[in-house]
Each structure stands twice: as structure tokens, then as C-alpha cells.
Image (tube, rainbow, N blue to C red):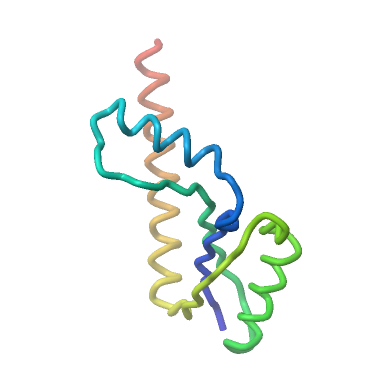
Amino acid sequence: MKFRAEIDIMPHAELLDPQGKTVLKNMKNINVEGVQEVRIGKHISMTFEAKNKAAAKNLTKKTCEKLLANLIMERYEFELFPVAEEEQENNTELEESAEDQEQVEVEDHQQTEE
């Protein structure tokens, strides 16, 4: 069975977030008011095969703990979604369409240079 994990990795609340502080400070420069706190993290989308939801949960947890998150400084949370056959086909079609579009853009760019 195919699954998609949507993973959020954030710094622990107790730790300083210099990126978040910089973004917060610069929001005032672009007239964005009323924002009190900004925390910067990572969002990861991962698609994979697993026998069942429990196996998918274990694989995602292991991947987060051993590779994606630095558990000393970060926490993680994730949601699992089964990927339907129809969604898999649509994703393949979108990828092929994007590749075709990239090829057209390259050809157009080459023609304008000539």
C-alpha cells in the first residue's frame, strides 16, 4: 500500500529561533503589522510503500528520528495519508506534463537565441 507522510519539523519552543526573529523584524519593514512571533521550520512530504498504516507510521517515525530531525534541537509531527491509485496516476501525468513544458521552454529559449 502506498502512503504519503506530511512531516513538520520545528525548533523546540525553549530555543531561540534567529531566522524567525529576522523574519519578524523585517515584517515591520514591509508594513505587516500585528505579528507577535515567527518560528521557522521545515515541511517534508514523503511518499512510500508500506504493508499497512502501522508499518507506515513506524517507517516515518524512524526516518524522522534518525535522519530528518535533530531531536536535541527540534521536534517533529506528521500525518499519514493513503495514496489512492487515481492520485498516483494524476501525479505521474502532472510530472510528465511538467517535463513536456520544460522541454518546450528550452526549445523556445534556444530559438530566441538564434
